[in-house]
Length: 356
Ligand SMILES: Cc1ncc(COP(=O)(O)O)c(C=O)c1O
Image (cartoon, rainbow, N blue to C red; front, side, top):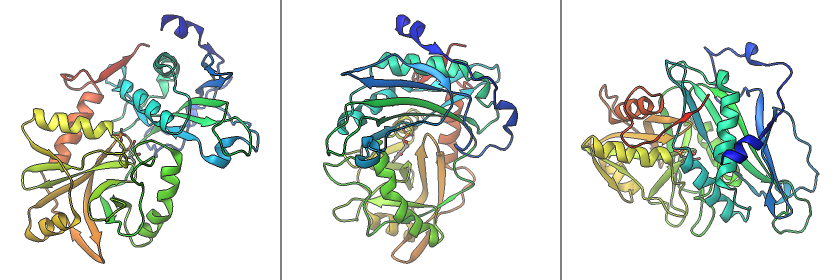
């Protein structure tokens, strides 16, 4: 580990762009920090990572990323506490998931040190880019894609791993209206739904656009076989509270195993909130909405943190959720962001300090 860290070369940007950024009014993921980490795979192995100024890439038109979509990514955040220390949240989980995605897409798995040491080196260099304002953070995007060339439909022999960063504010403006999907599917049994593969998101854009045109912000995906059970939303896992029980769907090969989701389950259990991990049918949801036992729905994910859902649409009918002052969503958001931003103790050992 130590050796790799020392071997990461750093080419510094001549001029920092940081003065051009309005840190009080950050949108999500649209301005990028000065540097990025780059690491290439060739001749059967991953080379040494290097840090270079954030810049455009040059790729051969026959690079397999363009034709066969061998592309995977992760999403994580760095948080700055009031004392100026910088923290990551469960970064090893992102590393493990990146490699689960890599394996499924026939991309060579990345050594742990390349990810963890590379991340440490990059975030230390970009520490000034980590916002301190409540609700803002440095969004971190590790990704791997096929640079190897050829029109033959087979895995590439060259890949690139990059980590880029974007100081970011909140993902959604306010509460979210969702449409329960009855026609399209995000993922299929035996497919790549559990992986963070770029194509999973491309496939969501058209149905999501149709939902947006109807006045919703997101689609809630249902199982591809029957469309009877809710699975997850665009970039979030979904929780529902019926009565006093917090319920979320079990992960499977169609659903992304969200780090926020499993953290919330652990926090809720610790706080004495009843939790159930089980299938939730749309009929159960509609019945609970009608009889008043459906108290809350919220999405959970790194980008969106905990995003309350204000209403869901199904078969042309909108079901409004109550506007609660003391919601489990708000409690979970506070609990998790307090851990992430070093405002509370960290019983689970999830916080990871970036050594500056
Ligand atoms: C499809 C999908 N589901 C769920 C999540 C939430 O996962 P996490 O909490 O690890 O960010 C994400 C975001 O990464 C996602 O893209």
